[in-house]
Image (cartoon, rainbow, N blue to C red):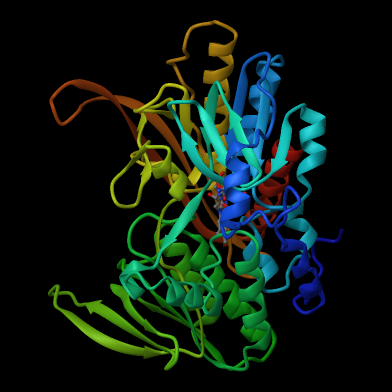
Length: 458
Ligand SMILES: Cc1cc2nc3c(=O)[nH]c(=O)nc-3n(C[C@H](O)[C@H](O)[C@H](O)COP(=O)(O)OP(=O)(O)OC[C@H]3O[C@@H](n4cnc5c(N)ncnc54)[C@H](O)[C@@H]3O)c2cc1C
């Protein structure tokens, strides 16, 4: 497929049906009927394993890496991935698909070819609960037991700051102003909004706290501005950011906004969305000035990509391995083994307490680490303590051909815990390349292709 194909925005809209979710003969969504749920609770998804069974929740960047590598290193183990989606869809490079720069099949892969090739089992079902006592995972299609459990289910959105406990308003906001940090429908909905956009204010709001892929909204802003320019759309891209500058790659993004899109992109620092009125299309925004004085402003929008506060998937809390309100996984550094249970591991964006960004690159590196840990325990060798920490490489496109990038390495240093006991702490060393170039643009696609080969073999 020719990667330089342009203006595929409308042409590729028909592929939206490819995001449909089904599984085990019923819709494998959380809204499964109580009858199906109770039937599923007693039904066994698979008979008891004769050897060691590793169950992996989530067939995304972390889960698929772990599946391939556990099986590679411990071929006798039975490795089972539980995934609710019918089709793998990538978030990385999806911003380019949003604006019609690449076709949908760049983002999608079938799950089953890789599972067959690498010898793990892939089951399409939605995980509903985890019981660590009986080492059982409950799904909408039945239960399955495990010897080791890897949780890589990604993130959840927390709309409570905007809508309290009004779940209907939260869902309406997700549909009308899609955050598009989760793969599938939200990206398709945001693409449709762009297709229909005739001009005015297009808001991108950045959330408070840790969130999936910190540079993604800034890259999205640049690419949407580029799309407005190329399609003669009289629109402004307004970024509302609680921080004082884009992070990471701030200088690179700010240079692109100023030098390429001065008449289109407006960056508003120290601006945090506190309320959303979907009927009036208004945001209540808290703006903090240099004297730390905060004033409330009303910002009108014509279309918006509103990103709420992120937390870990609810499953981390259900498994009893979470910490804090956001529910990130609570683990022992650097092994990704949970503090609560040495048979349960959390990887990917659900991870908390590490200085890692929530990125596919890092989820992939973590998948290798837990595969090493589990395979060595299955084989009866000692637990690995000298872990090679993951590295992060992240590119962001700022126009059709050019990108900026950042890489980070991590190391273990001696530190003390709050009680004064010695612990190992992970520290990061980041290097940004803020000078946009076509070489980095090519690097974006080379990196992505390399990751797809690692996950799927092609
Ligand atoms: C727009 C955008 C651009 C990005 N660009 C980059 C980039 O350039 N480089 C980079 O490194 N990272 C990038 N990322 C971040 C990257 O996508 C994530 O960090 C990565 O996907 C995290 O992997 P994960 O395994 O934790 O979660 P995921 O890849 O999201 O996998 C989680 C899987 O679990 C499944 N799941 C969830 N709940 C259940 C359940 N109850 N039952 C069964 N299955 C379930 C989901 O369907 C999903 O397939 C980007 C993200 C976005 C949104």
